[in-house]
Structures are given as C-alpha cells and as structure tokens.
Length: 420
Image (cartoon, rainbow, N blue to C red; front, side, top):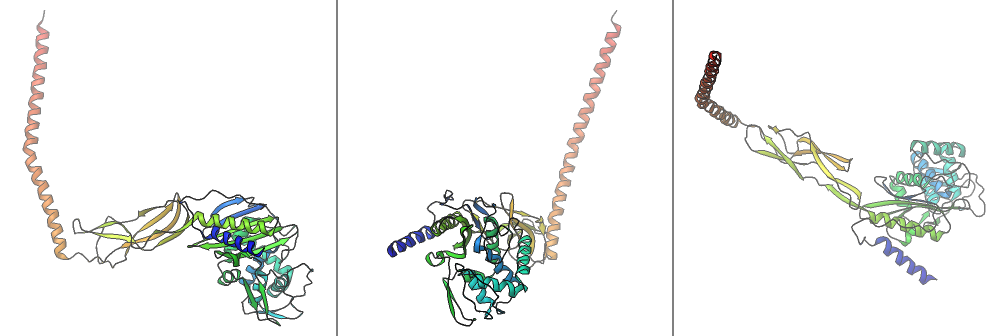
C-alpha cells in the first residue's frame, strides 16, 4: 500500500509540474464526483472552468476562511485570547484547548487553518468580537462587502446548518482575498506547524495533504461534514501563475484530491505570465521644432506584465503625442500614453516618455529654420510670378475665343433673318 501511495504521488507530481506539450490551452477536464467546481486565475479572477459554480451548497470547514479573514482584519497576530467555552462533539477536529488556556491569534489561526480546529475557531470568534453572534454578524457583513452574494454564515466553524452556505465562485474569490496576507499564504503552504503559545507545545498537521505531496500546491483549506461532503479550496503556483480551485460535494477524499489536482493542472497549463510591454520599447518619434526632420524617440515608461490565457493576443496603441516639441526636456518626459488591450479590454495604461534629453533650440537653429521657411516662401512667390504670364495669356485666348463664338452666332442670326 505504501509503494502504491508513493507511486501515485509521483504520478500526480508529474502531471501537475510537467509543462504543457501544446501551446494551445488543453481540453477541459472531466471531474470524478464534484457536485460543484471552479478554477480561477488568482490575479485577475478570470474563470477558466465552472461547474454549478453559483449553486448554493453546504461548505463545511471552508467556512473558517471567513473566520480567518475577519480575525486577520481586526486582530494583531500577537494578541492573546483565552479559550472560549466550547463543547465539541467527539468527531470534531480540535486542539483540545483547556478552559482558560491562553493562546496567540497567530497560533489560533494556524490551528483553524491546518487541522481545522473548531475550538480554535470558536476562540477567535469570541476573542475578536466578544461573542459568537456578533462575530457571525461581522462575517456576513464582510461577505456582503466583498460581493459574495450567494454566501451566508450561521456559525464560525462550518457545522451543517441550512443558513450556512456558499458557492464555488464565492469561495474562490474569498481565497484570493485572503492571499493578500503573507501570513495566510505562508500558513496554508505548511505541512505542519508547532503551536508554542498555549499551555503546552502542540504540533498540528495540514489536513490538505496535497501541500506536502505536490510541490506546486500551496493551499488552501479542506472541509467535511455529512451534508457538505468532501470540500477543498486549493491553490497552486508555477512560473508566475497562481490558480485557485474549488470542489464541493465530493464523495471521498480521494475524489476530492484527484479533482482538485486535475483543475489545478488544467489552470496552470492554460495560463502564462508574460511581459506584454517592456519598459524602454520604442513606440514612435516626435518631431523637434525648428530642426527640420530631426525627431526624438519616445518609449514605454513602465513594464506591463500580465497573466493571460495561452494564445491570448494583445495590442498597444499610443495616444496624446504632440506633432512636435521643443526643449529643454529631460529624458523621461511624458508626452503621451500607451494603452495595452486584450480585445476590447484595457489591460494597462503606461506613460510614453522621451528616450533622451531634448535641448532647447538655440537662436542659430531658429534663424536657420526661419531662413529655410523664407526660402520656401520666396520659391513659392517666384513660382507664382512665373505663372502669371501664362495665366494672362490663357485668359486672353479664352476671351478671344468667346468673342469669335459670339460673332459667329450674330452672323448666323443675320443670315437666318434675310431668308425669304
């Protein structure tokens, strides 16, 4: 059995870390048993695949993601809370906090995230807001503020309750919000952690075993209850790309892990991190006043990097450039704006700046320009003067022709009038 598990881990590692064989995005995968699922790119929220992703479902201990967010927003990691009065059922996950035992918020968060300890989550709730009902009200307020429209909480733990639900989409967005916190990112990427601030040292494991088995996987949170089934919010990173997966209602832990890895691999193979516009790229030329055809190159003043779907095309347009400029202008003077688009979507706006300093045109340069302009005017006047005789001759010839035509018409009328 140990050999089989090791072989399975090697296979899964190869599947997740191997680069895509094709430049095109792979075909959408089939899932084993997820009732709802999603995979989302972490920096843009782009949804790559969704299956019943907005269907409200019981979410078990992934509820603690909101518990952790509220605590991170309101508490200091070095704050210390006394253990809340909590009577867990025998099957519940816990770290066996003793009555009155004091533990830091840092360790309580680790306990809530890694082994999914219910007594740690209950202690965070009471310590943060003073009571569990007040904490749950804050959880729901934050859900509304984050736009999680299909999410509602009835407790900070994730116990089955008709009023405790969310969706794959909302959980993925919540995970992305939490990843702004370095402490959260570091914690959910641990295989285990030692809690040292309580009455005794406790070493707790990460229930998300994919973190230890597959190097690209770096989070996030498991869950299980009878009604919710097996749940996993996952994340993985490779070559500058991070994707978030969610599977809800899986029949077994094995199906949960397999479907999560399938989604994460699909996501990593479908995106790439690109330098869309490098700083310093020449984007055009602007003429220099009083200096004839001389011009200054203008360049991108910043670098644009984005995570995009494989095969996605971008284009860059420059707006606002003047037709000509005069100095003095230091290098890097902004003259316009470069707009980077994917289709009709604007990805970025960056300044377009001068590639070199532009000196002010001196008196001699201005006089030379004026002389060139004067010579041009003189040439035009001479051309006009030379053209006047031709115009006069043409005009006289036209008058003669009109006079002859008139005389012919009068003669014809006289002849017609003398006919008997």
